[in-house]
Amino acid sequence: MSNTKTSRTGAVIAFLVSALFVAAAIWLFFNRQYAMDQVSVWAYQPSSAVASMTEKVEFTDKGKFIFYATKPELESQDAFNKVCPRQETGSPILGCYTTDDRIYVYNLTNEQLQGMEEVTAAHEMLHAVWYRMSAGEKEKLTAELQAAYEKLDDSELKTRMEYYQRTEPGEFANELHSILGSEKASLGESLESYYGQFFNRAAVLKLHNQYSSVYKALYDRADTLYATMQTLATTIETKSTAYDAAVKQLSADISSFNARAQNGSFTSQSQFNSERNALIRRTNALDAQRSAINDDIATYNGYYNEYQDISKQIEGLNNSIDSFNQIEEAPSV
Image (cartoon, rainbow, N blue to C red):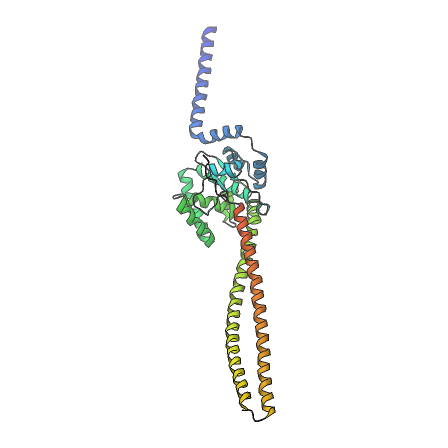
């Protein structure tokens, strides 16, 4: 009797264990990505720099989980260039999400561009999110992203998306998903709620504005200077043309005056003095015009020098985010 009962108990236990294994296998089948992510997160130890980025982006638990599942690394120039190859000359990249589900961010040292690494991290994390979506989820979200994109009517963003269409065919929605989420405000309630699953949008947009405002201030000043220079150049040209014509006419009138003086054509000293004084006044007026034109030229040159300085500042900023800003040395024998 006891042996029979024990046998039955053992059979029940065996059945339950088998059922648990089957349930676990089914769960793993439908949650394979999550299981892999969990293993990656358990094995990953973020550097202090990555931990700092994570804190500044204000990832939610869900966003942080996906971010850490990709084992993100902040890489210096040489290491970054090996894992994140450039797509087009003159188009530097700041981060990449690789085909083996890894995120790499370029380690920037320019303090003027604080916040750029963090926004890049958020951008790349959203690529990892896109990778984990089902086809149906992507289709639904693509429609929302496209509608928000068209509503923005942003020419700069359009140019940027054309670049992605050239370099990453078929990834338009994927890239738009990352760009809108990490850089663009006022996307509508649905998308705001969606992106809020992963990080604090307000914090990320603040970081984006922090460094983009540096560029914006320089470009705005450059545009103002350029417009001012164009207007001033037209003024200088108009004044110079009038001045040259007046000088030419004055020269002819002075020659005529001198010839008449030598020929005794003046009927009186009063007439001579009157015409001479008139020529002197014209000469003085032209001297004043020339001085004013020279002042305008000096002002133009000042604007031009400032414009050149701003161009150098922009170039310096661009060089600081370009991991390929140095020509590699030729191999030695």
